[in-house]
Length: 390
Image (cartoon, rainbow, N blue to C red; front, side, top):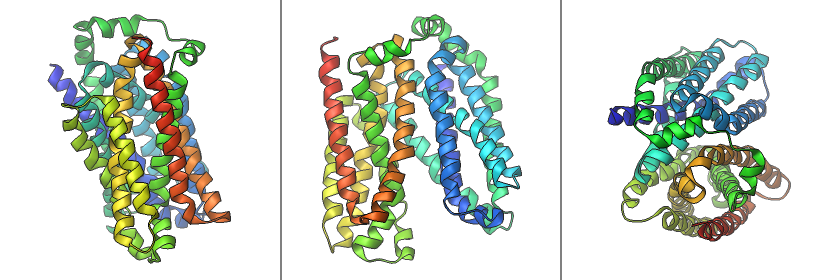
């Protein structure tokens, strides 16, 4: 029974990744059809981010009231409906409105599922599940490309993903009795549902919690900035063309996805703290490679190594949350972790864009290094402060 539930969670993580790269792959065609500026995608993306932040912060209250299964099913349904409405959109203002349920759905399922996995599954599952998120995010551009090149248009791409999400929603609602049965066999899960939501003041006064949130912000700031700007940096730093840079667009992303697959096996031998430190060391090595001039192979290797270094950080911090802060507070803390992550994803890449525009794109390694140093300091602060709690 529990094995079937794990399979459903794996499918949910693939589904969680599917919508994440749709807008980026479809926007070049969408903006021509809507006669919209290139930058308008940033507005839609920020609205989606705002929705995910709100629903992440509400996840503790919702999960303790309804349970993980219902919150996941409702959240995926919201995302599915939003994707379907995106596929039907004929004006930009419609995208702005439909981006709200899009973000609210994504944040709810992300926070609730991550907490459930952190509480009930081994560390290897957390890494492999986030690897499955990467599979979903990697597949959706191909779905969009298939729709566009086949002559059906970007609408068909959104519709295909919406149908996949609708099917998953139906499966999640059908599986609700399974979630309930598993909860009934787990006293900890029942306590979670019946417990009172953790107050905001209590969240931020928990020893090490604020440092953990800053650590999350820094990680996602580093990850998303690299993902968005690596190609522009290679064009400036290595003097390659846009067409050549596009060939290497997925290297960093592949590094993260493959790295998380490997990290799942490493969790059998090493604990979360060790793997996070190893990941941070790899990121530093990658940044050093990236900054070396005139050797394109080293720049490419550097971005792959940064991706491999990023792989264990996100899943391992989430998985260690119940152990560090207590199972009773984990949903509340993971909700704020997700909100912090989305804030880093939302604000750090545009800030680097301004610096690149007004100073130089060559600042990328220094910008990434600054977030890495702060992330390292905050993680060590979390380890030190929570050690005194045990």
